[in-house]
Length: 581
Image 1: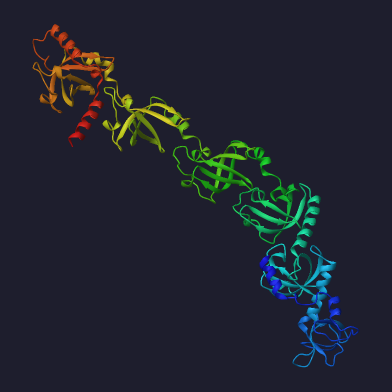
Image 2 (image 1 turned 120 degrees about the horizontal axis):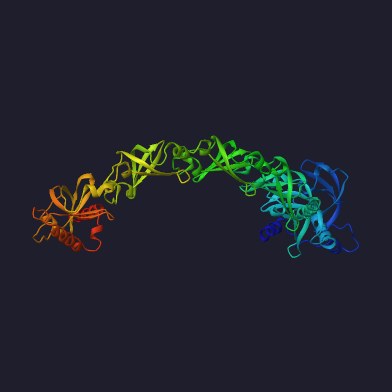
């Protein structure tokens, strides 16, 4: 405001002029009211009007000239009009009196404004011309300054549009020392608008319809001019359906009819709704879309966890990735569906209060796991290829991308398998038995060993203590050697049973692949273990010798050694191989 006042100061400096008509009269010679004194306001008559100004007769020997620019409305000036002018010079270089209508008006106006009016007074103001920072306004003949910020309630794009027009303005500052005046039009407009807003707000009621014009659009909504009061139409209240931006429905300048949904008279805020003009589609969703019914819609949004399908305007349902396929594991919804795609789905659940509908794609078809349970009863044999392997089992394809799993515990009757790669390979075709089908958890358990008879069921017929058997060394451990006998049954020759002589290392006596002959000295049905002895092989080996060999075998085994299996040997040898490499 200081800078704006500065421009007002520079427009007209009246500090050296007589401050009143009384002072002018005092400056005239006594007893002569017609004396021509410099700086005196005198009355004159317009005797001629030219395009650039008017000739004024003040009773002097020559007329004076007043430029057209000093008249407020020069086109309305006529010959014979009487005006007051300031006598600036009795004679100028053209031997004419130097007259100023503008300065005379300014002196008279200043006296009237400062004596009759004051700050806060409302007066008429004629917009004369632009200056830096605002407009010079003629207030009853006095040049007042109207800052650009005080011209209107909103931003002014072009101040030239106001030049030549007359408006009511409010005197907001009078500087007696500098003799300048600052006025405002904005304060009057704001006061008028405030009264209008108060009146309009008092008339408004919630749920009533009002017409308005879209004034501004933002990301979160649109401001609607209701005729003096701006209301906010939030994006969530524009449509029952999904919209990303208000500009999809509205545009600036558009006339619309809205519903008043909230009024805050203290903060002068009005909340508006457009969608509220129509019935909420969620009121009827339970009746229109019962559980189990099929619906059609368009995919309007996709998230990693699922796809949103618009069933009707304002009603969307979610197809979760877990409900897209019975057999395939879907990691992203975009792998199955795309935005804009038309789909048919089944209604799984409706929560009207939360406005949520769960939809399913896979439910359009019967659960193949239930079909499999009927088609493959427990105990049925199947053939399939090994598709995938884990540390705990192998997955075998049955049909239609449905796999069954063979757990390591169901791979062999005769030995414990720690890793499926000891028995199976990817792509290998196997025959297995259905052990269990769980459609709810989508799991099928298969058995590899169940496809064969359990040799241990007849172990007492196959092997008896004292029998001499032959087999091939399959694995070497620090405590002994494993020998594969007939029927895929393994026997263990402890290091103490390799020779009558002391043996430091098993590898000093046997190697993998060696064919050996040994005597059965122990059959443990509970632990499914067969103990063998090479040193017990002989023609003169009595029953007492056999019993002594069994006791020696049992005593020689450290606690837990008799539980060591082939899988553990694999692991120990693999680690040994890694160390050696």
